[in-house]
Length: 386
Image (cartoon, rainbow, N blue to C red; front, top):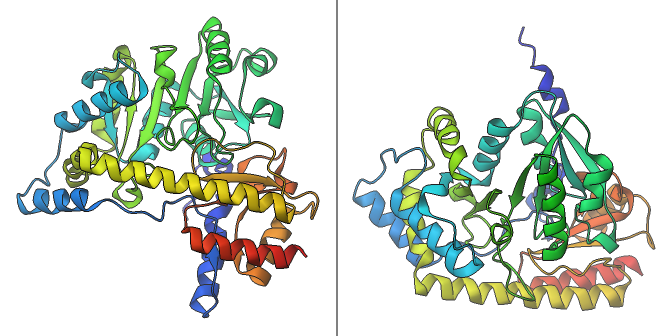
């Protein structure tokens, strides 16, 4: 008889996936469901990237790459971070290409966390991040945040919650589920507090390229000794290609190299060769058009939600999520979400996934679907709420 390891009892389920299953079951029954649930772009890889994949496949470029990634792709990512996000100190030797951001987070957690170590994260935050800490033997401490704090961890939280077991922080900007960024001033103060305690900072910049106000800069422009997590899934619309990267301090590269060589050998090689086409002028122009399309969707939903009585405590300035407060309508987000799905045909994720503080009265809406469908979704919700 097989008995699961003790750590598996602490793995947090992702209820958004269960919602997707339920929505798909209704679709299979012939129901018209508008999904504002799963955080996956409706856009897919541009033609140039697909053609690059085909060319690499036909040329037989499917063998292992070095564990840290294809050198040309590491150089392209380095240039991307220097040119777009101001991180002039990011050289190719600091880039590690991984099997998605999940692969990067796995390597970071295993490289930094010992059994019993604690890691601070904001509540709300992306639930799977807790499981990377758990898998490494650590423990996540979810710190309640407020709209006034943009639902982000700050320096005061570090001072209040750091103890002898705390090892570091894992933060994201823009954040999932809120789409809110952390200001440079707040981030600098947070970094200072963590550094004073000899802790690590893992910064999720997966949505950094999907911004709607001022063009962002990487956290590496404030401090060079940060581990950055990023991915080809969101801005580059390559979710199923399973390709991401991390940027690490040079001293940590040998450790990451040893782990990567054993745990994954390398990220998918054909995807790596194809991803080089992401950085051409042609592809980048397409990605920018799509970023503006996301902005138009956000702007429409913010206005529409105000009209139908859904409160948005913090205006999202990145990613493609709105974290709405539904307490005017219900204090049971799971029941509300199920009713919204079955009665209105609209799928949205209840707050339970993202942390307990606001779980009962929050829903995450993903606007990774067409503007036409968003108009229809709002009309359905208007009738439902009435």
